[in-house]
Image (tube, rainbow, N blue to C red; front, side):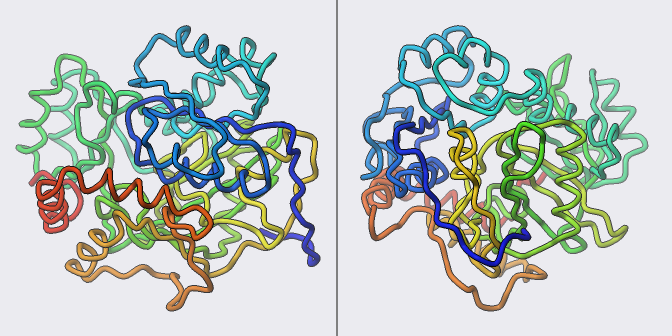
Length: 416
């Protein structure tokens, strides 16, 4: 990200707290811990919604208070809005999942009297979080994305299978079904027509899936964009990097990533955001297809990404800090992104490393040596979240380790 040559210190408004908003039962979320630390280190009072009092986030020294509120993500939206309003303190809302981002957007008029957050077209975050909605927006605005089909019946799937080039990829059409009854478990590679039809028999009369062309990782590069945009859809902070490893391999969350400047990709992302009129934080996953030289947009998360702490400019601004500064009327210092910086998620990167070594895959553009490393969980000034993560991770014991080993042997989720 281009910026001024002189670094300007970050001066946050310490009178306006931050509130981490998350719905669903997933206590081991390193992005939540990162957001609490990021603003907490600027002396911004931090609060968070947590599943229980013993999550890593709840143990952070930078958290003033956790609001224990067990949710599934499938509750009636009105009840969730009422719950947020009962918290009842002015704060900048920091959503960490699609459910929270969509709820805030669709109920912004009710929440605006109490909370600060970017104002956006109420329907846009839900559409961006939907695989079908995102694909339609990409087609509408000339952004490359994998070829896709959206079957409405088993007969549609049969017709697709008769002409498709295998392997193909199946994903849940809507982000929200992952906490209910998903048709597939994340990104699923399907190798043959027979395998697709076999799976489809269990998807019901209205299969909630998207079927996409498969972009082979041997011919592709995984890139990420994290940014924050103001009410005019102009960037306050914009960063690019490469995903070195993910878990599950080539299809899951980031386990290891590096900051790599990419002006072409930054420009593509900025133009797309301007065209759709989005405001707030984004986390994009794109795959560069070396076969046709295009960056293809895979996922658009209309909220903070779990690995956002990979990115910070030389003035100390990340996307969460940029949003808080902007919403509280403070200037957002500009600067260059930390080239070559690395981000490691300790509890999944070892398994990912073993899987990638087995496949002999290497990441183009990743620097041979990092200029610095940001750990997702461990921090010398805030060690308890790391220890709490370890305690909660080892509870499944041998079964958990066996599952990691089996997945590392299989690579990404696949159906032959």
